[in-house]
Image (cartoon, rainbow, N blue to C red; front, side, top):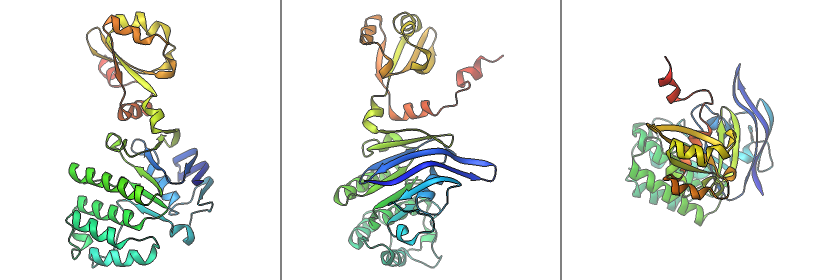
Length: 304
């Protein structure tokens, strides 16, 4: 069953288009990474799913309903982001008590246990927390609410490396114990790939691709070696569209990122020419796929 379905979604703020012609379907009980560069519409899309924003054009359905200003949907969705605000006088314990009333799947034992594990004082005011501690507490709310749709917008902002690792472990453990649909946006894709099942990749306000993470891990391969060997044994046999990235890293040497499906069957024979065949990380792949198509850093230094 599809929990979230978007069809030809557009969102404009005046003359600025934040999203354009975005269509997708996210299935029940999956963890999806919402990936893209700054300003590509990730936060806008999550807020639309949560019912906080209305599409300018197109159709969005969450649990088969229009989520905008919909109390029934609101009770099934929890959005964690850095704009979460509470009364200045509220302690963390006050917030836990108030949130528990609204969400029927709320797990007080998990909330209290995580508060203790992450060394957060329940009598401390939320307004007095550091940025990292606020992110940790807000994430605890999203996990303990156990909503059928949990939306996490850059939830680890301000957390140090050790806390981020613990957060990912908690998220996966709680998901396995209480399966639900989780959509997580982050710039730290390398840290997330072990818990994600699918990736929704946005670029310049549009949907670039929506694929299982296992497919993306096999999407491209890297080749590093002499430019002459690569030209003679590989480039002469490929179309320009097959080459995702080309970079000179030393005099006479070249690195190529190439779509795996475009490679000739005997491509591994290139190793005999001294060329290395390298895996491509998801971070590098997504950065390459969303890179500006006009010019690059190498071109900047070739000018003049």
